[in-house]
Length: 426
Image (cartoon, rainbow, N blue to C red; front, side):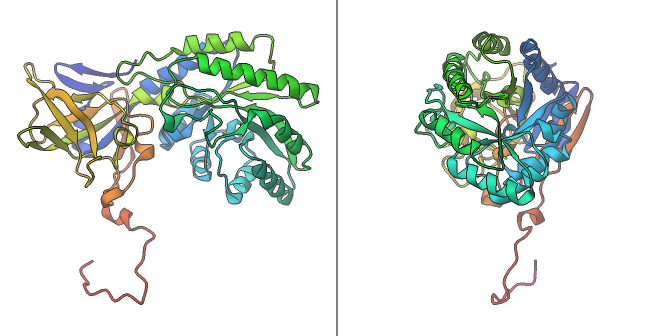
């Protein structure tokens, strides 16, 4: 459920007309509903009421500090994958002891930064990473809290680019070698083993692969216990999917029920969950303005001012996003058309052959369900300034990220002295 709806033919976000925001903030613009974010977090938390897990919002899904701060105010921790995300979570008020650090390529600088901030734990993904963390902790005179990310070799039945739990994927340590990895970590003087971690993929609509992976992890934990390695935290990742088109996504209650049933009597520590898309996906829209319409005789095009640099999911994953007119005419003729952006790539599209109303220049359209992996994956390709971000709370709205200006595009760049600049018009 979300709080985007039509009223008298006009699209609203909560109590605010979407057109009002677009007129002030300009387009393209990302708009997030605070009520939707809050509702989704509370539904997820309530589903796991019996287990009382540590919920660590997956920051990569949407890293705007206003979104992170909203979840922080509700008690959430954070799952991070970079030093930059750690910086963002601290700015947003996340408690360091609720931060878990995942990712296969943590740098020495990032590891040291996380140790200095006294995070809850690192989800370690390779033997060499154990060595680097141990060395970094030794230099700082601390013991690094670690969990080992175990790759259970389970097919999550999702897009191959967001599948992370097969042994062919780069993530985690193969479950066959996990006991050896734990033994190596236990022997390190500056490592403190506190957890075990798994994450098999994103946009999961079927709970059964998670349950299958969890059963493998529980069996491994039993073997670790027999070797004197006791696990305090079990991080089972995130990845719960949402409905973009016709997917039948598992409700958090069903997800929680399957997890709790599998864990019953087998684990008495703290469960860690890393929801991302399920919290923010349907809480955001991208509003774009129609620039031109074009008919080449065999195909019709709607050219809008948002491009693949603003929302890359359709180009990258072939992802579907519903496209709605911000003003819905009483009688609107539907025509099959491609919705495309201004980027100089044939892959710059949001829809192919979609039946949509015939709109005019300057009309507004809303791309739905873009709260996850929308702005966070945007770029400056074609030297395009990135969009503004707005959050709506009831009848109020706030620009939580200003639209970039041209000077932002060259921030940090300089022309070296050996190049003579002919024009002085800059």
